[in-house]
Image (cartoon, rainbow, N blue to C red; front, side):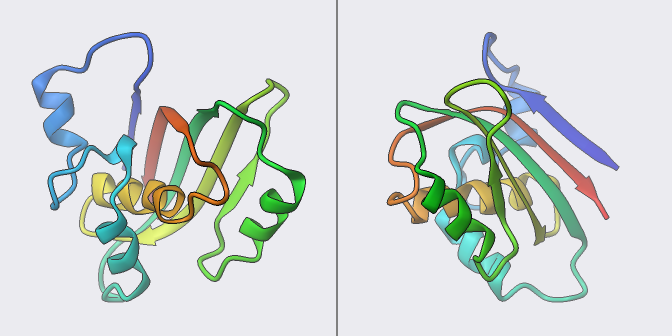
Length: 129
């Protein structure tokens, strides 16, 4: 099952907003630190989700910070496609639903603002493994 949303350029319907709201009331594209922390101790019986999050940043992310993310204990990665100031955050999370998995992965950015202090998520995708 794949769940995806493009967040830039148009308003989301109420149904889309509801679909992408985590159990803590946060839109997945804004991230949720509670979901991020919960995913670290998630029940292994929960589904595993492959998450991809495209985001833009006001300032470039230093190469060292990009490499440090690769060494993070949850196997997250931030890559930079060929477009300046556009990044792809990817990782895996155990969660009941895709919105919770995405909120947790984006919550990583919120929790670790030393990596990127200002960002805007433009597209989110969660695929159940």
